[in-house]
Image (cartoon, rainbow, N blue to C red; front, top):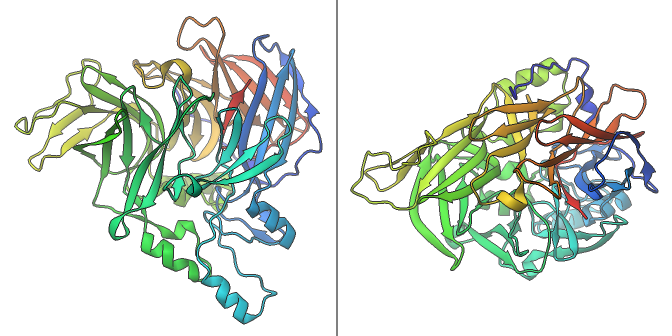
Amino acid sequence: MSISDLEHPAGGYKKIFESCDELAEPIPAHVSGKIPAWLTGSLLRVGPGLFEIGDEPFYHIFDGQALIHKFDLKDGHVTYYRRFIRTDAYVRAMTEKRIVITEFGTAAYPDPCKNIFSRFFTYFQGIEVTDNCLVNIYPIGEDFYACTETNYITKVDPDTLETIKKVDLCNYLSVNGVTAHPHTEPDGTVYNIGNCFGKNMSLAYNIVKIPPPQDGWYIAFFGMTENYFVFVETPVKINLLKFLTSWSIRGTNYMDCFESNDKMGTWFHLATKNPGEYIDHKFRTSAFNLFHHINCYEDQGFIVVDLCTWKGHDFVYNYLYLANVRQNWEEVKKAAMSAPQPEVRRYVLPLDIHREEQGKNLVSLPYTTATAVMCSDGNVWLEPEVLFSGPRQAFEFPQINYKKYCGKNYTFAYGLGLNHFIPDRICKLNVKSKETWIWQEPDAYPSEPLFVQSPDAKDEDDGVLMSIVVKPGVTQRPAFLLILNATDLTEIARAEVDVMIPVTLHGIKSQ
């Protein structure tokens, strides 16, 4: 079972949403167990590390200032290091000792020291978009970039963790923002999906291609098979008019500009990779939120799409304000009762569609119960196969053996288990048999598990999982790098450090 029956009455999880200091130099970790000799290099992760500026708090989990973490593994020894990324948002906040740039769920106010006329003009200078790159880090060629989901990415040095430069993607691409989850092909080509303003204030989507050479791998916000891109359009949208006008109103942030359409449901869009062309089939299903694709692949004229969904049109990010996740355990549970419910789902999209086949299930794959039915309006209605479901128990931040199985028929997914939004276990899911495995300890709060394939791997799950785990209740060494056997989630080793580590979102294993 991947369902957590652990309770967290001590509320130790609150500690992962507290500010910390950066480190002047790497500190040694205490290793127990034996780290495989082949497992060397660095685990790089990013997340929020500063949850207030002076007495001004950030309100949302995606607002804290970006902190980059690094565990270095060499000859069985491990060190830990972290630094704040010197974004404009961070540097200006530190200089002015206040929040200067509006974040996802926190509005910045004009400088109180300015006179009323200069404050008035500040309101009408347009949108100052944040460069607070706390969500992910990925390679392009030999370089590493931290990112959020705006048009700014920040180049960082993976050795020293120094901030090198801020890059505005608008200077190179016709996009206003891109996802924090690009895809990488075996030859190093990087694909991402961005948004831009289309006709009549509509939102359009662009596929972005960055040619090789590069290295690295990522699970993504959109799906990619051998020949197709899959984009899922959920009912949660940015109201562009509100976005462009409301920034002149005191106290408005990004979250205020999201709206959810309770009538549109969710749509799947397909595009071919080479040449890049939109396929004019309309696939529709009931409403859900989506933040992470697991994998998708082509099989016998179908595209199989596996997703971490949240049922309904209510925006899940509404439940990720810091005030929510810092509540006492009973209150956390109560709040999660009204939130959208998580579910791992498999959808199957037929590529060969004929209008005359109305009312018939077009899916003929023998191993799935997912259906696709042609409707009288020409749309294809999809119903999913549920791969994992537990009340208020999410399988999120998914990972696979990406190097070998991205875009291919696969068996295993790994994820972070959220218990009423609190991360308290690492999960493995067999998407074919629905068998699950978990790693869990009382009052331990892990992060997204990264899969690293062993050099002599024969099976899909030959390798290890790496996760940063925090145990706030212990007096010594409250955080550690955990290394699990990916086959059965048994512990291989841990490397403990004598500092707290706040929540991290995504990361990468570099050589």
